Image 1 (tube, one colour):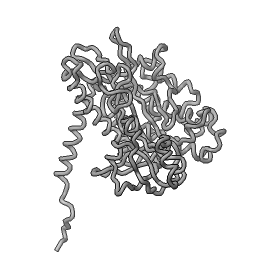
Image 2: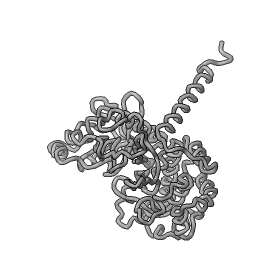
Image 3: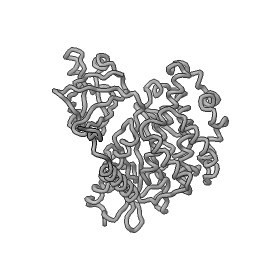
Image 4: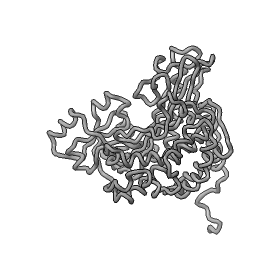
Length: 420
């Protein structure tokens, strides 16, 4: 898809709303028509300095901004907040914008803040962020909301930056006693008699808006079943004994098929907070989820003639035609996810791994390497402690040292043995 030239200007209202507008770019209806973008579409814009991109969701312009547009000729003007504007690489307010061709990936994992005495700190009452900040809270739980990306590695790096930011916010928090010795703890369920907490690792997929606007959710339901099989079952094995969230009849969270299809994303809500324990499993789950959704979309798009004929994906038997190794009875997908034991889930791992290796984009970038580490944890039965910060810090420090060693060992570029 070709790049689009757009004029990016500051919106007072978007700036006033702060972080809730962080991942948004707004255009009036006339200007969307001029530029050729649709509500819910994902656009990539270059940032200053580090030559990376940020992904912004197209939304309607606020009335005040749209009224200003109405007094002018239709144009390529778009609105962002001041915070976003400061990050963009602009030349006289103009930049090249690339519509996303890949699925955009986001997440909002939750965790616990544990005091030195072992008790949980209520994140909502100690002034750590809000329900809209990048490090904030969802009730008692601390919640991370990293910037989305089309790349799981970038999203994981963004998540680590927020983990570091959370430590800074906790250490300087005047409401906490001994904050330096508190810790961030990852689990899927917590019960200390006072709190009974279900902890999630929700993943957001920026799928085509036409699928999110279908009230019957026919294709979305099928994609979620594919995620239940290829992503949730391996994640169950990783969770091990941390099963109460997914097995208890009294807890509505973490059950097979749980999702929200709300513009602009499909939010997959089955995985538990256990996945946040270590970057190997966080990055692995994000990479696997992205791989599965992109593969499912590519197959379904062909079968349905560009999402125009939903009769071809109407029920589970149609899905089995697209993915022949998915169990023919939907209950056989649900059962491994709802049992205390992981034995039944483990029986599916070999088939899941074989199918994953045949999916579109498996050989692209670092996908194969990341998933090899992820599935190695499953096959070896490796378990990680709950201390998020220690696990992530050690992993990133080791990776940085390895990169530095690789640089020192690399031959000097640009020299030829036969020079002269």
